[in-house]
Picture (tube, one colour):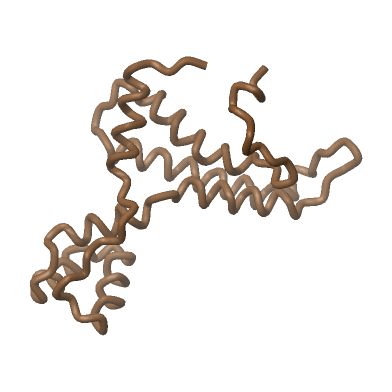
Amino acid sequence: MKITRSQLRSLIKEAINEHRIKPSVANIPPEHLDKIHSLIDGGRLAQAQSFIDAFGGDPDYVDDYIAYGEVGDLEKLGNKASDVIATIPKDSYGFSKLKDMEPVYDIDQQAYDLVKSKILKDEQVDPEYFDREMVHNRRYYGNRNRDPSVDRSGYFEDDFIR
């Protein structure tokens, strides 16, 4: 499986933009931090920013907090779906009933909506739209379709594609 230069560029750009370090809370009293986080989580970003400004905090804190919360979000949804799949009864051929799979399909829809929102948020018009969608979906389905009973730590993805 070969990767194009533009796909590699997109992957690197995506990796660089992920915030793996928790944002600095300098000058914000700990007793007010939970309130600020609840405002951000509730979508009241301007109000949270006004609190941060009042305490002399980082002007980028709201954006950094949101970005930090998004790290691994697709992988977490994939793990959640995989855990649900593991609990669903299967017939003698290894298949589950469609009705039993409904909770998994609900999580699939959440992941699909998240992928779309990420792509639309990243760039207004992206010529590599489908490449980016493929990368995002791979992050989700790579975890969703994992078999926890199989250790693949010594294998490459190409070994399973053949």
